[in-house]
Image 1 (cartoon, rainbow, N blue to C red):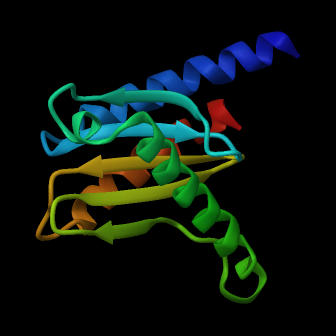
Image 2 (image 1 turned 120 degrees about the vertical axis):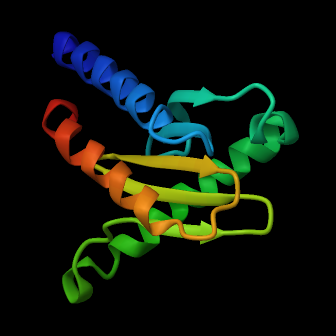
Length: 132
């Protein structure tokens, strides 16, 4: 079982790297566990990561995990959530449920975030078998 955990961890690292290279607007890619703790993260030094204290970043990540948990309550009625987009004045944020993890991507503000969301989902679909 330890080998499976190591392989899964490597797959999460690969997923983070692939997604972070998709678009120049991407400032942070984080994979969170059920408790909102970072499992893997890639962040630009001069971007959003600089603007958030460690405490605020932790709170933000817990918010994404809580939202994902709340959304699962309606899976039976509406189907599983494929992804969420949050647009703020200074950032666009995407979250995706991957097995027991939540993938969060934070970018510079985007006028049209849907094409990037689609590209990220394609990468996730290609990697999900090696993660779950």
